[in-house]
Amino acid sequence: MLIKAAVTNEKGKFTFEEIELDEPKADEVLVKIVASGCCHTDLGGRDQMAPWPIPGVLGHEGAGIVEKVGPMVHGIKPGDHVVLSYQHCGHCDNCLGGHPARCDTWFPLNFLGKLTDNSTRLHKKDGTDLSVFFGQSSFATHAVVNQRQVAVVDPDVDLRLLGPLGCGFLTGFGSVVNVFKAGFGDTIAVFGVGGVGLAAIMAARIVGCQRIIAVGRHQAKLDLALEMGATDVVNSKECDPVEAIRAITGGRGVKFAFDTSGKAAIIKQAINASSAYAKICTVAMSPDTLNIEIEQEMMGPGRTIMGSTEGDAVCKSFIPKMVDYYKQGRFPFDKLCKLYKFEDIEQAFQDSLDGKVVKPIVVME
Image (cartoon, rainbow, N blue to C red):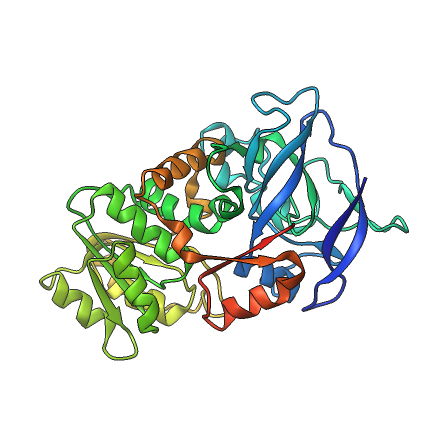
């Protein structure tokens, strides 16, 4: 079928084109995309900061309605409202052990432009293959995806808002619940108050953390963090975050420190603001991420530093749970979102970069 897509033909640019989409195979699903979140990871592909091959179609926070399913698809039917998440092989030890976000082939499957069968379902009208992104390429009116990355959600919830649950909000929420396993009476500092950080703050409130400290540079976002569940905020432009966090925690530091920046200096702050036996988790990469000099900060206090991908969540079961928390009013992620027309995708990303919006979402119709 012919579909409309925002194609990346050259570095740093989207071009709207009519392209061809193949029929779904036996274990695949055809989804009419209703809306897609705009994530900084997409910018990594568009601007070629990541090794994603162009030309291709980006987008990895898609939400839509199922139009067709292959004969081997189970638990998904036409008419279902769904959220699309990351691609994974389904048969390596990590996938079989309930950790598909740690799939042995997670990076090539999501970033190198092919599906699990090493092909693509997207083509230009002249037959040129187009790279896929995260196995979905949701900056388009339709997508063909593997059933493993499709989560069926409550049809009573506004589907336009749900795409970011497939990646950004999933990463923040899941890292608190699945990676830290935070709970009653725990202390956590969240460095960065964008969509991922604010989702982590809301999750920390849900699981009962005693102190939830938001660290950022923009007071408006810190004020929003208080609304979302932070007990304390630290403006890193006005004070030393390490000293501030230790003052809030009576000198002990936090049990969990969550970094959304990937910047070496901020990760170092997260380490030094944490307590003995603390866990420090980062979910981003930047050019200097690997230039962190750590020695006494780790050995003496027995801290653990780790990374998290997609919140170590099983998307098919975890995403519907997040939707239920939203329905209860306990996970109000809609307050972070702004809707844009699909044709305004460039403006949506620019507003995000300028700090005018936390989570832009493009709506296809």
